[in-house]
Image (cartoon, rainbow, N blue to C red; front, side, top):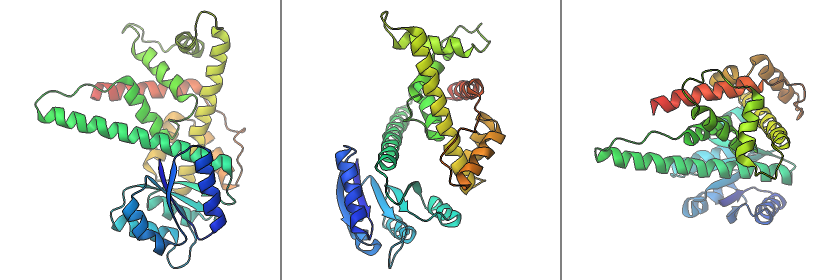
Length: 296
């Protein structure tokens, strides 16, 4: 991945560049100490991601983003800020910010966000390539191929912001297992059966399937909790966000989403109070997968 850093604080720019380089997250192709000075540089280098400070002299982060979009920049923005102001954060998201990095800069937070962004970037490019291929095939008069279960589940995981989480691949395998069952198998299996089915495909004869099943359960739980936090974050900023409106009440007990939203409003990073229904989450994902598969 190719990064450009815009921040009037030299120490912040150096720290971000060091985190990106040492974490092998990509290359920093340029830096600028102000929004004004960044315009021509970003336009000419065309990075994949721009890390941009919210508060800067002359042009602030949001104004700089607007100017860059006017110039035709199509890359993605990650905002850097120590300001916790719902109105400003909401405006930044409306203008196209994908994630926020909070000051003071934390190495773990930066690496986690950039890895998620990279995964989403690669997935979007893959989906774009698939669409272009299908469009080309369609123009030749050949019927497009039905989307695979993996492609459909990846798109759902991407919508929930958990495509790079440890349990995402387990969910893909679960959906493939469910979709490949005999048509007569209409009853949704128990979680134990689902875990063991995935564990069987992940392990060799020398490995303990029960132990692997427990690991799968823990990965799934952590991944779903991340989805709760992602949706609650969207809802706390924009209650009318389409993703929030669709996924929050459909995949979760809405009261639990509201509880997490309150924790976020109180600047709490703990989500121990939130209860999740793993079976409901997987059932809804399965129903959505079936529907999208039939439509493709």
